[in-house]
Length: 181
Image 1 (cartoon, rainbow, N blue to C red):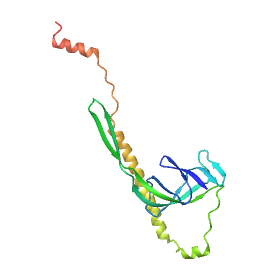
Image 2 (tube, rainbow, N blue to C red):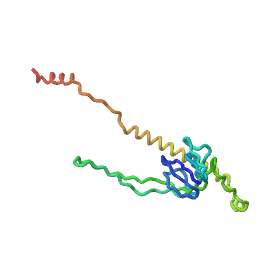
Image 3 (tube, rainbow, N blue to C red):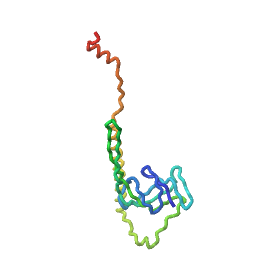
Image 4 (tube, one colour):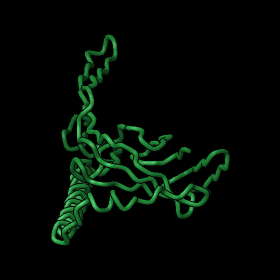
């Protein structure tokens, strides 16, 4: 069984227990993440292709780590023009382990046995509320930062100005100089 998901402007083919490196998403190590944008779902030959997404399909995963990729150097040059620009980029990544794929046509996830339920301590409500508040705050901060960056970029770009030489202004200047006498 596999699914094709879309995140960070890219598409990934994932199976349960796969570890993928994607563009950074909000969260900390150990958090559970869900990918709702499932483009295709395949369950033992029964393929479902979305138009554009598969309704009700979801891919669940666990955030293992927030990391950074290797640095890439971008060097631009135009020969004989004394034009050289050097720039670097280091992509921020999230490393995610896919735990489950659910949706129409997907086999149901294995139900926890009584022994597993007994071993797992019940989740504290305060812990859940704290995680929800943290996630909401992080999302709000990310949105605010994005808006601020967009405004800053718009402010940096000056409006395009059309400048045309006015022939009337030139003749007035010559007449003022008195050189045409």
